[in-house]
Image 1: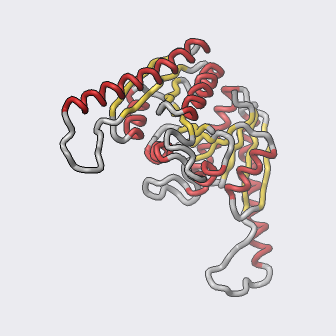
Image 2 (image 1 turned 90 degrees about the horizontal axis):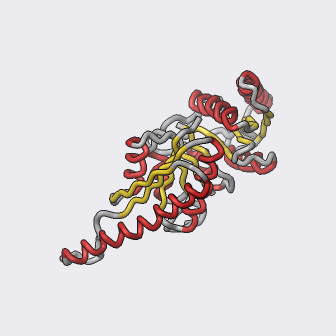
Image 3 (image 1 turned 120 degrees about the vertical axis):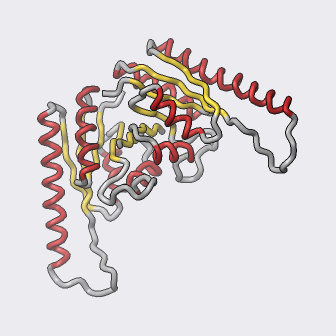
Length: 145
Length: 145
């Protein structure tokens, strides 16, 4: 029934576990996967101070480097499991928007993501990006724990 | 990967659409399903007055009858599709609690439910019971839309 699963990752251990399970799941139902990593566009500071020159560029390139590493790891796991895999890097300050948009663009029919990501388990609540994806997505979302 | 899907229903149209998708999903992965309907235990009134015992009994009986019609619909759909199906009727004032308990008792490995149920699509938010299941469940939840 599901043919193409979007696996968003933020590189956190919880999200990596969800990616691995997502690839297992894709294998078991003979689906393909698209890995997605969203990097922030802007780096706001707490004060309205000017950010020193070169910092912005450095932060951006570091984030992109990290994202590349995460996506390469995802691709490797998929290849090991013989699951067809594409990876996408997006720049956005609203990860959930990028997740929903890429899912639509790539024709994914399921989004599978961890209940929590980088910011950890805030008491009993569900992670904020997962929550926003659930709110805005028009395709089914499998929340993994 | 998933062998046993819990399909909770509140009898709403959107919930039945999800049941049908859940049964198709079960068929495609060779899993079995458990249908669940949770009805309230207590009937609260706005004014604190004594409720005749007979009325309470009648209400309980009526709830059970209605739940059975929902569950029979699940059984029929599963039979038509060729999926193994069991159904459970529960009474609980907090449906999400019963959903999680039954999922554990019956050893379900995934819960599939609609993003919204009987109370409808409240603007952009996820339905309240779905939200509570997402918050408290230890097994994956597939939120269908």
